[in-house]
Length: 278
Ligand SMILES: Cc1cc2nc3c(=O)[nH]c(=O)nc-3n(C[C@H](O)[C@H](O)[C@H](O)COP(=O)(O)O)c2cc1C
Image (cartoon, rainbow, N blue to C red):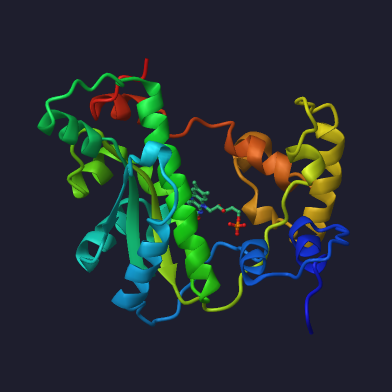
């Protein structure tokens, strides 16, 4: 059955989404609207040609001032991937990914070139870090969209930063290079569920910022989301601290997640990599 322009946004937001525009649902729109992270892969390699083509698409993304501050480290050594997977039991599943890579912000390149050209490097401040991190986010998403457009499944894995010193050592990261996220790539075992997003009423603002309807809209969103994909009691976080509640859902889950400190050493690590975050 052909999907109409409204069908895919309807699935994405779990609510009616009227579109009357006179344009067709393009392949790109479908790929983006049907995005889902995939953590279960068939035992089938992703050929080097495929990976290199997807990397070419990723590195076609725009970059701040054309500085091109992204480096990708492909983990082709299975023993190393096993070490990364074993080190943190929460990411044990990455060992089965046919392709795993770590996407890094790379502010080292421009600094090395500045030295070579004997020019001052006068941009040692927070913006230097942020620009590289944003470039990674853009290129990484281009990779994922390109991969999904040919039927591959991907999942970003920022959990590999949980022990940042361990990861940094495994990858031999020099000063001014920092990991943003790992990326698993493979052929999906089955289509994953579509994760329902907050409505545009919350995330898109007209002319000025206005979150006065956040709680009301979130409450309705939560109901839609739980109806589509209920949370099992065993999935509830921090049960010892907050107990098991009947009405769990997204705001309960996300606020429980952020009730515990995570990766509090990341700022110190970034400074150690040479960044002056002033
Ligand atoms: C920057 C970033 C980091 C992420 N890190 C992880 C991760 O460490 N582990 C994981 O299982 N999923 C990770 N994800 C996937 C998110 O959990 C996922 O995108 C989110 O739950 C929405 O689901 P969807 O991608 O299927 O729409 C990450 C996503 C992003 C954008």
